[in-house]
Each structure stands twice: as structure tokens, then as C-alpha cells.
Length: 245
Image (cartoon, rainbow, N blue to C red):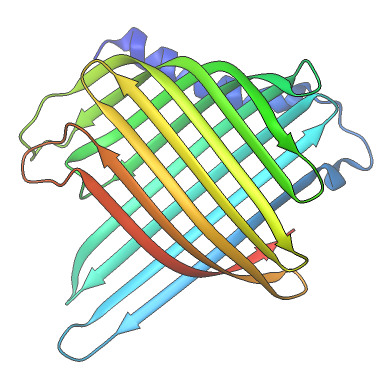
């Protein structure tokens, strides 16, 4: 991996995060932000002693033609006093709507799964997006664009690092099918000459009271080419409590 490639990736991520400073701050700027914070905890004992903690936070900002999103996701599990899962994911996305339903975007993500055989996987991408559906209860977006991905194999795994150009496709659907319930589905595909990585998230969120909700989600990440002794498909089923703001 060259210094130029690493610098380009970091610079793109910083630009995506820092671009929101272009927005003019005003006295009512706090009302432009919305988001969720969620937490899940499972503790089992007996023949197997296992503790799982899941946390996720997402913040969104919309102002005029600009839309900004940042997401952080984590999962940690310990079984019989030994770490059995440890994942961290961070993404930044900035979009500029130049027509009623069309926009351009910049995207950066960093994925650190300690049990995947990879030290980390990082992606930057830019391209075109379109809101296919937008009404009071449904929104559906699609995105397409070129990008670049760095996949660093863990030092103890058998495999080769891979830095490659990719084509990224993304779609997200959200449906408020009642006043207190929401269904969402997203799919992210990053296709390269050496490897293709797909990630799907299906979720159902039901309001409990006020800003609190209960969320059931199913995540599957599929990697075509993985280091030896690791699986291509990685799944996660979670039940979390969500606070929306």
C-alpha cells in the first residue's frame, strides 16, 4: 500500500466529514439535526457464559440542498471469559441535491471486524443518486458510483492485502406502515476485480413510548474472497432499544 493511497483515503474521509462546515450556522441550527442512538445487551449463564453488547448511533442533517449522515456501529461478545466477536463500523456520507429527485454524493467508510481475517477494510466512493420514491410514508433511494477500497489482511491470517478500484451500488427503502412502526431495508454492494463485498440490513422499529422504540434487525455481510479459515457470510440478529432525537 503506498503512502499516496493512504493519504488520498484519509483526505477523502476528512473532506466528507468537514464539508458540513460549509453550511451557515444559525440560531436554529439544532433543529436541522435528527438521528438515533440504540443499545442492546444479552447476558447468558450456565453451560455457556456469554455477554453481548451492541451499540449504534446515527446522526442526519438536512439544510437546503445538502444532506449529511454519519453512522457508527459496534458489537462486542465474550464467551467463557474469551472474546468471541468484536466489530466496529464508521461511515460518512455527504449529498448535494441538484434536482428535485437527483443528487451527487461522497461516501467514506471504515470497517474493523477483529474476527474476519482482515485488519480493516476502508472505502471511498462518489457518484450519482436518485430518490425513486418520496411521500408521507415511504422513501426509496439508489446510488451508483466508482470508488476505491483498501483491504488489509490481519497479520495472523493467510491471505494477501488488496487495494482496488470498485463500483459501488447502494439502495435504501423506508416505510412508516403505521404511526408507531417503521420497516427499513438497505443493500450496499462494492464490486471489484479481486473481491465483491455485499451488506444487507433489514430492520423493524416499533415505538414504545415517546422517543423510545424497540428495534429488531438482521444484518448479513458476504465477502466473495476471504482469508483462510474465515467464512464468507457473517450474520447478526439484534434486538435493541432506540432513542430518537
